[in-house]
Length: 153
Image (cartoon, rainbow, N blue to C red; front, side, top):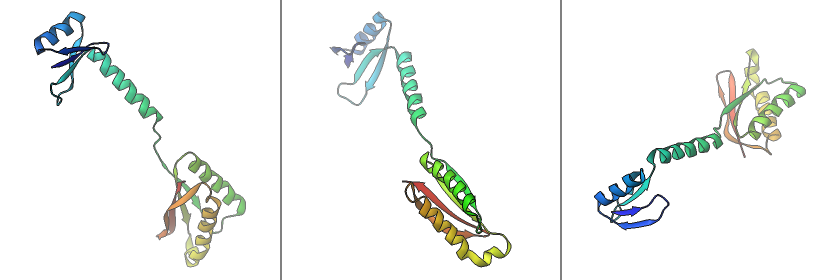
């Protein structure tokens, strides 16, 4: 098998007994790094340290990873301008953070007879957030709620 030393130097093609003896002389482990190669490649290294460094790199990669969440903003058909601006500002912040926003329009009582008013509010939301987000799921009526999902651009 082809043996690579602790500092990355080539020790050549050696029998397994000599490779094990060389690793034990240095107080290190003999680790097979390429079993399918001809001849197989082994490396003399501290296996515990290698596993620790590998786990440390995986933790660092996970820390940099951003999980996209689904945030929800609820509106009503007769919403006032200030309330609309306030809720839309929150949706803009969520999109800026890289999260998706579920826009829910809640109807009560006879408001269900005027679904077009709710559609107008959702159109205003789409127009207000057009620069930071795009509609991922169009608005659909589910019971008393009309929902749509906006994803960041």
